[in-house]
Image 1 (cartoon, helix red, strand yellow):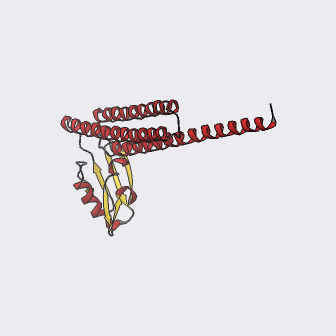
Image 2: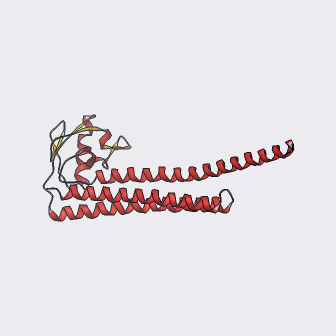
Image 3: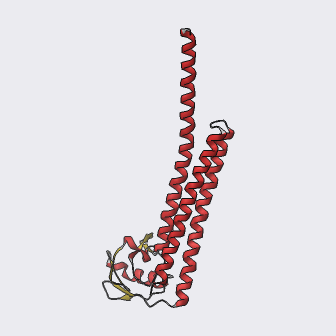
Length: 210
């Protein structure tokens, strides 16, 4: 074999290796981006579930309450310390005492269904026993949040699949690589959808706990 032929074969090998590496990168980037977005969808779902009131007090139940703090909408959780001295009691102590009244109104007007007691320097909130009807309503809300999360995850999957199809169509990857990537995408999607189902099941158990 001549030196020139050896050189050509080495160049061809290098080109093939570089193309394979480029193909793997563009596919990996697409899958990684989809998984990161699904992660964020799960985190958002967890925040939504945490804000749903159960029969027990917990700081996260106030996470969706926003106060107009000198013209700036600010989450209540950033404006006060929230303690839970008893299972069905919460104490809210504002960092700025002048905002106590605004916090009281915001909590009363929220969908938590509680009536805070203003003690001058803090709000004491006693959670009433949840009725069976209220529990069923909260379970419906939790299931709705779960469906929203699954729709978001499936939309992420759809957009990633469209990108994989484009990559194959443009010749950046072969059909075999495209099929393998789609299978991996489907596996990831199934894992995240199952995660949502588990979150919903856990929230239902909390709501049914007396």
